[in-house]
Image 1 (tube, rainbow, N blue to C red):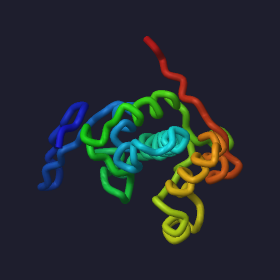
Image 2 (cartoon, helix red, strand yellow):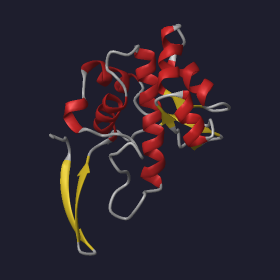
Image 3 (cartoon, rainbow, N blue to C red):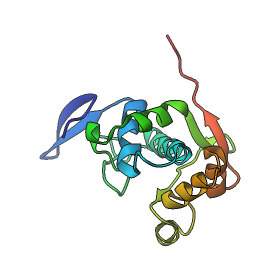
Length: 164
């Protein structure tokens, strides 16, 4: 597979780690495309982009270990590199640039899974169903409403990036 960003090889405790460093937008182009289909309703894609960004930000500030922030598997967020990127996905990620799910000013670890059943089993119902988000989007519900439906009591936060 091909990946964007930089590759860093780290020897630690007798193991060799290959760590891919990418910026958030580039990371999300792949994650959203790896998690859902690019053919989905754009509002579902935007909801997925914001949820994935929030999840990634949680681990940016609270890394899983000293070597990397997040894994690339279903346990975290699926990250398949360039092969998962698509123009529709990029537009959805760009349209929501810097937005994250927030609760009382903090970043929400916005858990999500493919279906309501998985969300119920894995997260005791606290998370977004990707298929449910698609269904809501197909009914004309916007991404902000989709997110507040699945993450009650939250609102959208906005990262302010230094342009210098």
